[in-house]
Length: 338
Image (cartoon, rainbow, N blue to C red; front, side):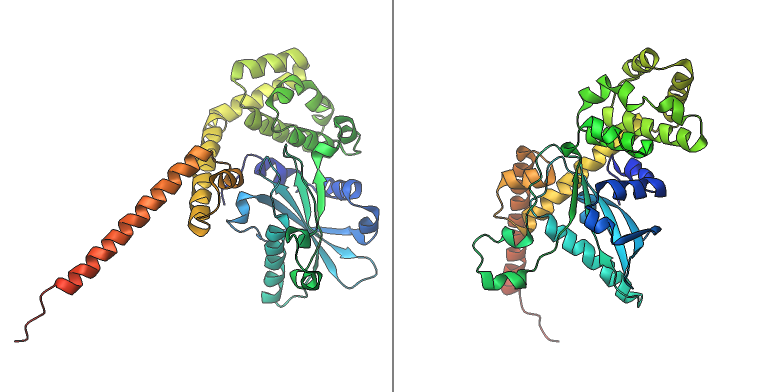
């Protein structure tokens, strides 16, 4: 599965059990939190995201017991990739839940209660609604057959920087702060000191050093800042000790070819994925407007129009070839029996 720019840091951050627990304790509604026995919290490393879903989400799945119940809860935290909110999140979540249940049934395990959490750091407003509300004007008698279920939405744009920085666990606070502003390169450049303000304290422990390095790598990848500007920002805002860590991390990444090459690879992969997604949408939904396909795939309207034209030409060529083949069969001389 092709990784998106935020995958690596997101999966690292939420692979820290104390981070995952602090995230649930802070963001879940109290009535849900009371149901969970967080002392039993474990990770589920099964791959539930399909190649199709990977264009929309990355996931980190937790499991824990439910208080006063024999059931376990599966708690997938799904990071939304796009910079805009999807139109029908219930549809993708329904497929995702079914993957969890199908896997458990295939392994002869008791199905778990699934609590989906979407972590959203896009720029457009997410309009959360009921599943049956997608079907505007549907008779009330049909609503039970459409069904309904809910999900927890954590929209980072709803939280101020101060609220995030007041989280009791620093790794979670600075990780989410950076993710919140991942689309805003100017903020990231201007506020580098705020993002790494606890860096020197974190560097005192091995776990903290790893976090700072991971956060810094993520920062480099999403800012695409040139080396000169980055080094100026580092030397102008941090002590000698912190500077040494940042600059050595940067130099090591450069030596290993994990900066420019990684960014170029991500851009190339993103383009290929958008083109493939466009082609699939055009094939499956030929009447869907170009603007909608562009918005869903992240490609430009011009690219969608070019792909539509190419698909039409390919289909016409295929029809012509089939017609010629059929005509040849009809006009061909019959075989003479000897």
